[in-house]
Length: 369
Image (cartoon, rainbow, N blue to C red; front, side, top):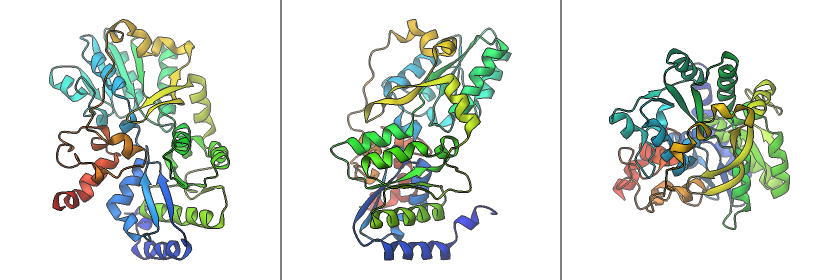
């Protein structure tokens, strides 16, 4: 397929793997912070091409996976209200909370609509002025501009039956939380190319210098990942603490300025609880007070205040997976008590989850063990 096959060329992959092998003279541990990269690594066996002294570990690169149990419980609560049309991207429906999941609400008769764009939800609100349309706004910085646009358009059009349950998370604070942990063993990062397409990578430069860790902005195809690893290994071996850009066909240092301006107009940083990790200061987004009329947590404060604090399944090890401290197949529940059909945690559900990637492409390894 044009523009895809070019980034899956076996001969080029072999040459990049040999370059990495020749460059990596010492042991290094590298983390990718993107679920798309994780799936490319597992699906195409990128890690099998690397020398044994180079370890790739998977980070919290899936916004669905890190959405807290309490937010899932709030979504289930709002979706169960009789006058609500609840809108969500499809991969959120099976994510378990402490009170079930959105798929169960839909099966019980809740009006849950799968959308492909925030503007689809705004259109629903305009078509159903007698109903409250609540949207589950989930994602990294990548999808924040689209939600910001939906909110500004709702305000301009005078649409008052439209609100967001916001679960947006930001990548740089999560990287800092990992690097600050006493358990940290990450020596270099492959940064998420799609996030940097919007936000650029200026912010990563300060992180690299503060923690002495090089970062390479990387794309999602197998050759992208291999070239990103090759660039990162060169930085590590040479002792250079820098940020480099492998994904030059999409990313610039400053990112998408109009999109960043729109996000800054509508949102502001806020603390966010990451599933399996805990609260990370400044790692989420919330609507600025001028847009409170579109904040579902404000609009439905009475209904949501009745919820008790949700608890994660104690058997789920997703927090360790998301911090790069455990590989999915090292979890005792993987592929047995935790499957895509009956997941214990979000990484087994999401299309970008590490556990889902291992189950889909390497599940037979665990079953044969």
